[in-house]
View 1 (cartoon, protein in one colour):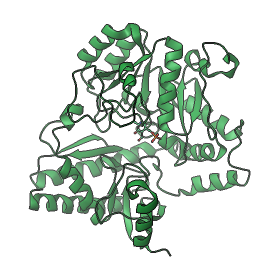
View 2: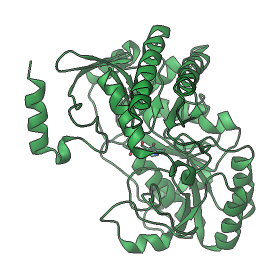
View 3: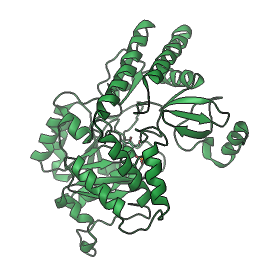
View 4: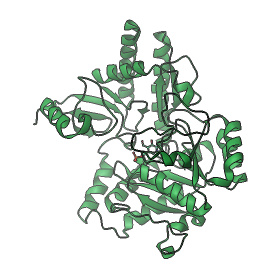
Length: 429
Ligand SMILES: Cc1ncc(COP(=O)(O)O)c(C=O)c1O
């Protein structure tokens, strides 16, 4: 077996920052995954971690779920990717249409970022306007139109956007309007003032780990409908996680378009845009050469392996009691973390719904992005590091819960939450 420290050294040579993207475990805590099974990861040294990162969300069934492995192996023997219609792709689209209230048709992409990119493009084609509105703090992937005001340290006045990355053309800032999440009056006023130029309003219905305030999504739905601006739900995290029909089922508000990713493909690279035929028809290649045509294609879109994995995952999720179990596990973890916060007398909020939530070190209730700015960034980093040190992995700002986490896993996790918070309380850091 290759030595882990040697692999980490080699990673630092050939991968910028020695990592794959934005996730890091911390100095001296980085590890290389040897394998994942169920709720656990193992590193190259054979150390076991309880996994609440879950591949950044998709592994709702846990790693290497037997039903998914079997479906993928069966498909593998027949080939992986054809760039042509295949039965799993058609069946998965049918299942998404059955599950998702706003969906009549589905267009596949290979990542969530592409899904939000093409949802905006098709909304522009349909609405024949250019600008898009998104919410401060909302994350929709890494393309130029959405990496705007995701994490500004000193936010501007609404609706001015701020690019979150180097390399984004300044011109894009003229195409994006920013609204405050959970502030219906301001969002409504911005939509009323700018509807003539708006192609779409894009939102994470559950923004990061902030639930929508009562009436917020319904009010946004009414305002967008009033002005005939397509409302796009980014369900890449919430889809098939909050309910089989996603956040639109869970919160009871149906958008015009929705983007799915992560869970829908059971850990393989596949995502999609879903919506009514009236909008989705712009993707139809029969329109090629007309001003209505939206060019969208990708080498791996609708590949049979990802679709087979998605179908197997959704079949597991349809089993009776699945979501009750997920919510029960998540609730135990969330309430246990809240109890530990109280026990150690820390100023912290445990924010979010049971399937995915997090802790923020602030005494301010977490209702919007600006409230999250009051949270101590060093403390959450330190908390995450104390967890990794004790064998628990989570996302930088999320605790993803899976169906593979057992009651014993929850007990073990809560004991480690307690120890990590005790370490923070002891040093005051
Ligand atoms: C809400 C949301 N939208 C979009 C994306 C982007 O998806 P991907 O990483 O597959 O491009 C993510 C990824 O975490 C996400 O959380």
